[in-house]
Length: 162
Length: 162
DNA sequence: TATTGTTATACTCTATAACTATA
DNA sequence: TATAGTTATAGAGTATAACAATA
Image (cartoon, rainbow over all chains, first blue to last red):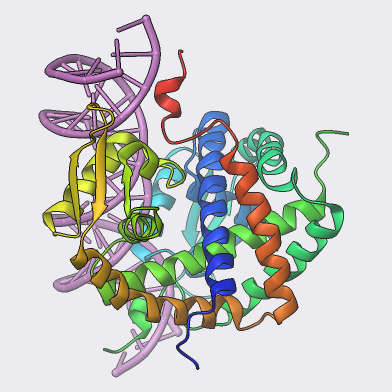
């Protein structure tokens, strides 16, 4: 029984993936036009802006954005060159790099966010009732927490032995 | 009021995007390991296998996968070279190319799908009740249909004048 | 010895524009 | 004139492995 394909699961999975793919494409365009950033760069800035002291280590920043470390280094380099973040060695752990968002980074985010919400609203939330929104938020929060708890994080490549 | 950020919408949106990003990363890996395909290639094959006569035109195939035409041409070239699809001119419209999945393509899909479902199940469905699954399926089907009806399709670049 | 982060490199994906041909 | 698809090309994103520095 464990291997049987359950049509409802399959349909739900495909509907989810296609919807998010379309949504991703739309917001990627919006972020590019409104703020000249890729969606990943936007996510990194958003994460930093939301972090306790508006700074995170590279490893913390990578987690959840599902990146290879070299990819993050590359993106951080671009964001730093654009003056949107700064990087400095951590006082707590000399190996670690502390990444912080700058005023310019916050300003850039502020330019992007209003239009961003509008895209999400017109594509994702328009066909949903308040009850749907609530249900979706509840479900996806649980799914996200479940996935975050799983081993395959961004640094998985390194943590595995074989 | 139209511009105000509604926290519940924002949280739902981010939870959705992060979850699907993690899920996408996991299934991409599974598809690569089980069938040596990218997720996009897998999607194209899955679409063809599901099509009325197991064939679609390039334009039909592109729609919903959110691709530039040249990108689809490129991927179709790879899949054809691998013997997983065939391309031939359409009898109805000489401009169109009919893409069909081969037996090898169907076999490849069959190799991938069981493991694919398992990944989706362990990451996405594990923390959900039957009721959640039903609600999520219902919601995402509506969202997908809403997005499909929107203008920004794969060929948008061409349909716009400026 | 394990972990953090960077570098160098190669590869894939995607997008733009110019092109051919059919409607 | 508009559409279907291809080509060439250039750019961005990502991953691998080897590396240096610190714990």
